[in-house]
Image: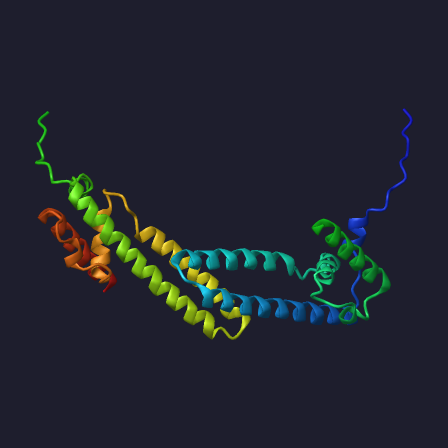
Length: 127
Length: 127
C-alpha cells in the first residue's frame, strides 16, 4: 500500500521553545524581566496602599483580599522565567508597555520578531 | 452469655447540640454575635490599613495578602452561626473578650454554664 508523504509543516511553537539564548541575551533578559516585575509590584503596592487607605466597611477588606489574591496569581502566571516561554512573556510585557524595545536591545533578530508577534497577538487578544 | 449493662454516660456533645433556643435567646444571640463580628472586622480593617501604610517592598504585599487570606479563613470558621455550635462560639468569644457576659444576659443558666466551660477550655487550649 502506498503512503502519501506529507511535507512537514514548520512547527512554530517547537521552534520558539527551542530558541537558543546566548549568555549575553540571558543577561539582558534577566535584567529586563526583573525590572518589569519590580515596577509592576511597586505599582501594585502603591495601589494596595490607596485601596486600604480608602476602606470604610468590612466588606472592603475582603474586596482587597480577593483583589490581592487574584493579582498574585496573575503575576505569578505572567512572570514565567523559562527560556522556552520568554519570548511570549516579553511579548506580553511589550504590549503592556512594561518593557521597552530599548531594554531588549541585544536580542537576536529572530527573537525580537517573535516577541513583536506575541505583542501583536496580545493586542488582538485584548481587543 | 450474660451481658454487663453499662450505665449510659451523658453524651455531653449531643446534649449541647440539642439545646433549645427560645425566641428571646435567639434575638440576644444574634445581636451579640453580629456585634462581636463587626468589632473584629473593624479591628482587622484598622490593622490592614496600618500594615498597608507601612509596606516598603514587594514582599510586604504578599505578606499582607497571606495575612488577610488566613484571617478571613479563621474568621469564617470562628463565626459559625448554627444553634448547634453557638455555645462553643460564644465560649471562644468570651475567652477572647470579644463578647461580655453582659451581652449574653437572658440566656438560660445551662447555656451560660456551657459557654463558660467552653471559655475555660479555650483558655486552657491557648495556654
